[in-house]
Image (cartoon, rainbow, N blue to C red; front, side, top):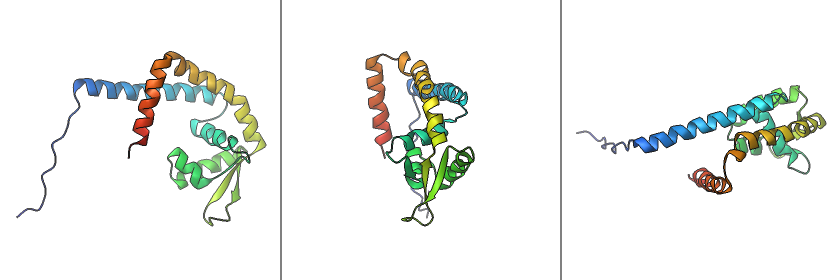
Length: 154
């Protein structure tokens, strides 16, 4: 006698649902590629910019590796490897975290702050050009609500 339960039936996407899904994927790909290209002109990747901007928002320019990895949706080891590359370029430095023997603090350096200061105006212009200014205020509001709803789902 088999103890396998029957699988629930697959709820295939309708043509309209598939169209919207694929349009969403194309949108995300296009916007990220265009803004990444603009950041590359400053020698930065999207993750570089996210790390620098997050650190700059803190009064002391410091965050734990664990907090930063969670914010970015990355594993600690992935962020640690990325931080090593950023550290070699002088954008950040690491400091020991006394509360977590295996962890560390990521600290924004003066070079990192200057690089972010130079890149931020052009990055904001890029986000406007490739995303914000292509939508009206109502569309932005709706998209914001949709994004928050999906991001908050378990």
